[in-house]
Image 1 (cartoon, each protein chain N blue to C red):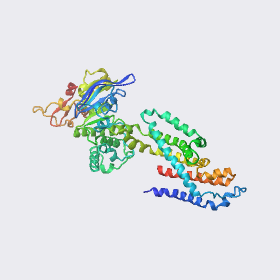
Image 2 (cartoon, helix red, strand yellow):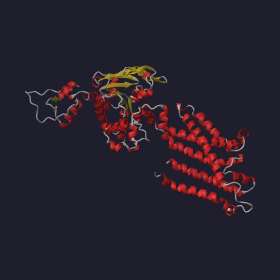
Image 3 (spheres, rainbow over the protein chains, first blue to last red):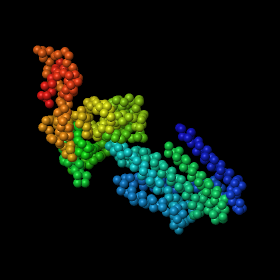
Image 4 (cartoon, chains in turn green, brown):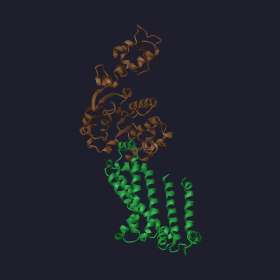
Length: 237
Length: 309
C-alpha cells in the first residue's frame, strides 16, 4: 500500500481544515478586522461541525444520485450506435442550465422548505459532468478491444462491466470530480431554502448585514470543495 | 468443417459479399486473399457471427450457425485480429485466460493452460505471464493474441490480417510459428490477408476474392496455373505470377532420382529438405550453377524447373 504515503499531504490539509473550524469561534479579532462596523463578528448561532455534517450529507447525497443518473445516462447514450445520445445530452444540459437558486425556488411549493428542494437543485446541477465523463470515457475504449471482447464470446453486460467501464473509469472519475466540487460549492444556496449547511452563515449574514458571517461561511465552503477535489484527484490515480 | 452456402452481405445497395460458396476442410489452413474492400474480412466474420449474412448460410461441422447463440459459438472459435485488441487493464495471463474463465475452468487448470500456451507461442511463461500489454512489443502482443485465441482449444481459428501491422522480420517469425502450431494442433484455420507472399507461404488452400465475389479456390498451384483468370493474374502481379507458381511446387517432385550411371557431381549446392522450386531457382542464381542436389542424392536441373513451371 503506497496510498497512505501519497495521502499524507491531503490528511494534513484535512486536519488543518478541521482545526480551523474548531478555532473559528475564538478568532473574533480576525473575522472582525475587515468589518469594523459589525458588532458580533463571530458566528455562534450553530456549531461549525454540525453545519459541516449537514453540508456533507446534502452534497454527497446529491452526488450519489447525480452519479447514478449520469452513469446510467452515459451508458444508455453509448448503446445501440448512440441513438439516444443527442436526446440524453440535451436533457442533462437543460437540467444543468437551470440556475440552482431558480430550481430551489420553483421546487419550494412542491417539496417544501429544507433539504429536499436543495437536493433536487444539486442533482440537476451535477449530473451533466458525470454524463459527459461517462460518454467520453466509453467512447475512448479502443474499437479493437471491443471487437476482441465480443469475439471471445463475452456477452454485452460482461463487456460493459469487465472491459468498458474499467477502461473508462479514469475519465468517468474526472467527471465525478467536477460534480463533487460543483455540488459542495453550490450546496451553500440550500440555506436559502432553510437547509442547514455551511451556507447558513452566508444567508444569515446577508439578512443581517453581517459581512463577517458571509466571510466565514464562504471561506469554509470553498475550503471544503477544494479538499474534496484533492481527495478525488488522489483516488483517480 | 466450415461451409459457406451462397452467403451474401449488403451494406446499402452494395453487396460486400456476393453469393459466395466455399468449403474449408477440417484441419486445413485456408487463406482468403484479396485487396482491401474485396469482402474477405466480412466473409470471415460471418463464421463467428460478428457479421450476419443477409442471405445464405454458414455451416460449421454440419450445423447451421444461425441456430447457435453467438456467445457459445464464439467460445469454440479462436479470433485473432490485426490490431490484436488485448485488454490493456489485464495482465498477459488474464488476457489469455479470457475464454477458459468464461467457460468456468478452475484456477489451477487455467494457470497451467496459460503457461502451456505461452510456451506454444514461444514466450517464456515466467517472463511474460505477469506483464501488462503496454509492456509488450508488437510481435509479442500478437503472439499473446494468438495464445488467447487458442486458450480453450477451439477447433476453428479465424485470423484477420493478424501479421499485417508487423515489421517484415517479425512477420516471418510469426508465420513460421503459425505453420508449426497448425501442424501441431491440426486446427481448421481461416486466414485473411492481402499479402501474396504470406498467402503462398501459409496456404493449404487459397481462396481469392474480388468485389465480394470468389474468383478462384483451390490448392495454390491450381489457383496460379498458367491459364488463370486475368483478375487473379493481375492480383498476383502478372510479371511475377510464374515465380509465385514456382513457390507452390515441391522441388522433390521435379527432381531426377539419383542414378548409378551418372554419379552426382560432388560440388553441387545442396537444397534443404522440403524446399520448393522457387527456393531451388534462388539457390541456382545464388551459386551460379544450373544444377542443385537434393538431400538423398537426387538432382534438379534448370530445365526441370522450366518444364515444371
